[in-house]
Amino acid sequence: MKRNLLTEITTQNGKSEFQLRFFVDEGVGLLTTRDGENYLLPNAIDRWYDLTQKTYPKKRICSCKSDFFELGYCNENRVVQSGQVDVIAICSNCQKERKITSVTIECLKNDELLSFCKQPRLKYKVTQLTSYWSVKDLEFFLKFITDSLKMTVYCWNADHSDKNKCFERVDISQASNMISNHTGLNFYFSEKELDLTNFRGIYTSDKDSPMLDREPWRKLELISLSAPLYMYGYGLVYFIEYCQRYISNGILRTKSNRFERKTGLLRAWLKDNFIGKRGSNCYDGKEAFDKFIEESSC
Image 1: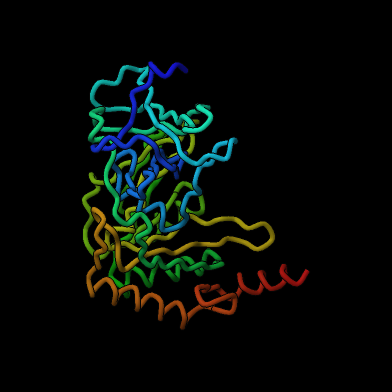
Image 2: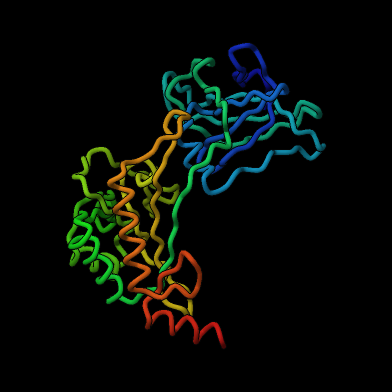
């Protein structure tokens, strides 16, 4: 690609060489100047922090061993105000160029593409619990959520003929059926009524794998339950996730004391009613745990 087809990406003070760390599939990346300043491309600081709680992307290195690049975006589709553009990196040493990713941006003004990021490694504690459960164990769990914790069940549901995903409130019976029929993607439990218009989804490129474009439990006071993952020979494993703190606009914030009490009650109930021998964050039903031990010993 000829360089004259690219629009150069620079900081407001004119710096144009960066070390790169990108979440390629997500279209979000960190740019670090030679003097150590960090910027996010596109301007998506909250999404960067959500992604880096699980993993931190490796620094990109050219085949010539250089780790600094100039960047530009290719606007072949002639996006004027917002849309998706390709990001091209050109090695500062050997001038080799390659497409890094595509990013969705709201504005093509160069000084609005990047956002300064003072602390790119800011972290908060995420709790992830795993459970091997039978259907009865799942129903037992859902009954505790609704009857004891007084929380409402919401589901990201893919069972729609027009392939539009639906985020909706469901009862225990509906939730169990969705899991059995593999139509419920993720479940969320909330004490407060949710405004369903705030939730939307995207499709992956094959138009056949719907997914949420955000993890709403990170910032909202939600407990998340994943759809079951089938482990061959072991059965169905579920993941429960929640957090007491979150990051908004680069600031670490704390959720309410009431939500902290709810999650504490949940953890205590799991400990009292399930088997925790696989580890400190594991809560298995007896039937499922016995099967796990049997398969592990083979």
